[in-house]
Length: 125
Length: 449
Image (cartoon, rainbow over all chains, first blue to last red; front, side, top):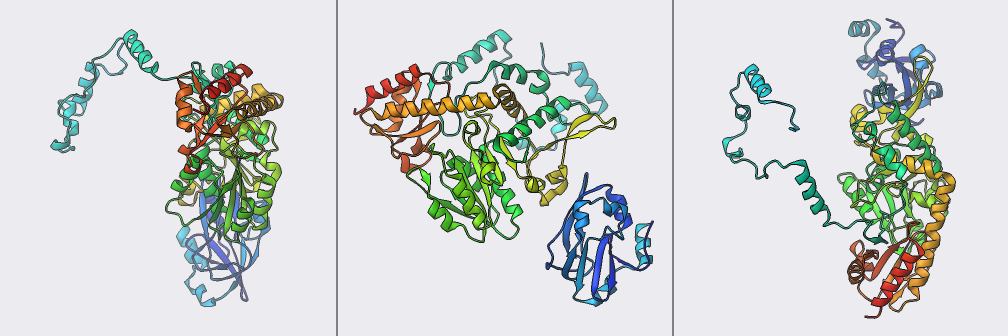
């Protein structure tokens, strides 16, 4: 199971990559495997505020709909139109092309509440 | 022949297996004082011959459209139904099947529904249609819910009073408990007051909803309504008579976002007010918020075309409280009748039906207006239904003509007390010139008395 070392994780299977004050967010390889073929993603608009562990969108597989939870609080700076147009990229490249939103962090101390790669690996095994 | 599958022997063996002496023991959980002690007050079993005779006698108390000449409307109409319709709908595969949507064994049903959806989308000039809902009233409720779900920040609805009063009542009932602001726009001179409608549209309006032809038969200006909706960023929902689309421009061409209506007029008997079906069509971009069942075309593992229920993640059994609606049904048999009807009629046939309706209704109104004691309350463009102001109380007109075998129309006052001197008369392609002339003659015999 692919659990990159440079990321932090939530219990709801989202990952976050922090670069300065920008956080890039997506779903993990484990999540995309469990969901199966992803057919649709409902995303928020740029400039919307998100709060840590609050739902910011939904992700649809053929037989299920799941909420997407934000690992961090802040303002959405960018939304990945690629996942809107070709949601299957989230299955193919969950940590790269399959990123979902980029958030301007409002509180870096929140990162302490997230899981590190080791803790996340333990969660999914 | 007994219609219960179990013999006494079967029952005895079942009781033995579960170690009970009689069926009464299974009811032990029901408190003594609540248990039925006496047998139900039912007559003894009756032979088929006698039962049919009894039912025939009971049924004969009801009038039907073979014995009465009907000018009834107000949402349900006596249109011609080709006999082919019932030949197809009465096939047991369609008639008796319950929820036959498993694609492995229901390709016939799913294909028929896909055809139905395609025809409705074409008729209304919209992108997607669902597999039908219960009726026009619940279609309105569902459309309102969908608009509210789509406009996350707005909770206002601008609703014309020209929409069938029953539909508006159903919509309000279904929206109970939700924080909605419903503003009703009055009908003046037979048409929705468009100035008022424009005034009521604001940045909290999720949808503007208008019916055309409206409840009193007038054809509304959907272009103006569409523009008003666009101007305030609201969705435009149109409620229409599907037969009228044989000749009138479809709402899709006026930029409607959702098109709904009562589908009964397409190949379904009026019966005694049902069963009916509601049609529901929308734009492609909104299809994920579309309520109800949706049949889609796909290919099987051999690459052969097939049909399935699709986009099921919209529905409440998956999306739960986030679904637009909890409806998980459709009126398959009624929608099938409509599909057969539309296939038989085709574009030209439907146009002909619509044309005949217009011609006959206009002829009827002209003749009625020549009579003393009958007049048009206003002069608006209309399709197949029109109001008649009567000096004799409409209820009395209806009673007296009923005794002559004519159902003169519907008393508008039953729906709207401001119209208690108005009779709504509907004239479909079924009404012959002779029947219309006879109606006029009978009304003439009443007039002024």
